Length: 331
Image 1 (tube, one colour):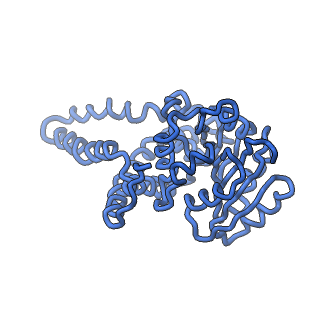
Image 2 (cartoon, rainbow, N blue to C red):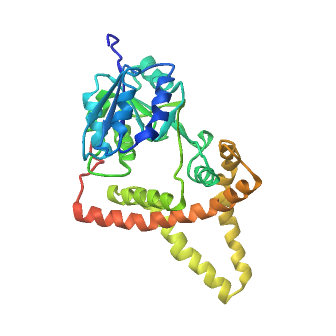
Image 3 (cartoon, helix red, strand yellow):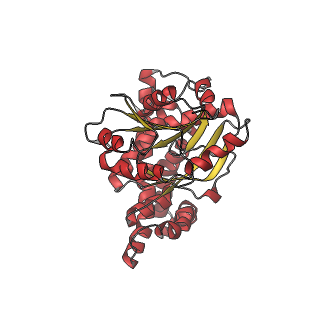
């Protein structure tokens, strides 16, 4: 590792078993290989570590066992042991585009002023439900502002020094840890570079129940971290005040008043339906029934996600009141 800009890739895993192979195969296909790859295992009880070790003779791979650690602690352990000055971070359950490492690290290698690079992530659905979920919850690149985009830790790179400057990933929280990390990085590093070709493909949650649990946990994390107060207040006002008032007005004044819901529904569902055709094309098999099912599921997913957030957020606030976590906004 003679190059002064050594690239280390860090990924945490837990009970991934055979499902980790697509990620490992995508690492083998990279146009630019990291100088080292560190997988931090949180104490898997299946064959995850054995599968990883199968690839050790083909990848510059090292497995670190950190039993009982959460994802933040696992990432921090991997980064602390990394020899690289440039750190790439991804997650289990993704497949990386062949140019992922090359595209993600190029801004850091080309410009010493760049300290953080945001990669991209896209849904890789296998079913109509997963396509509808991807369309409903994930923006297109043309819908974001590159200069303010906060990356998922499925696809991000940064200088190890800036990770140290913000104290690493927050180990006191179980969800939203990468969002808090991003916001702290913004305070120290300023604007992030954006690497649109550094795409991590991932499969959305396979069922409505799994999606509900995911969004409940996200919203609980928001409450724990005291994030997005206005967004949550607007959601409560919409569902618990505006919607009941509209229903009551239709019953007491005139049913035609219920038509006022149409403009709101158009705004609420326009983006998912605009994205749906492109995401449906990523699904392996498509039939007219698949299309109909996906179209119907979009509003269902919207409502279930909102309900999950409205239940999860106060649970997070209650935890925050009991536990008094550190002020993560102080860097």
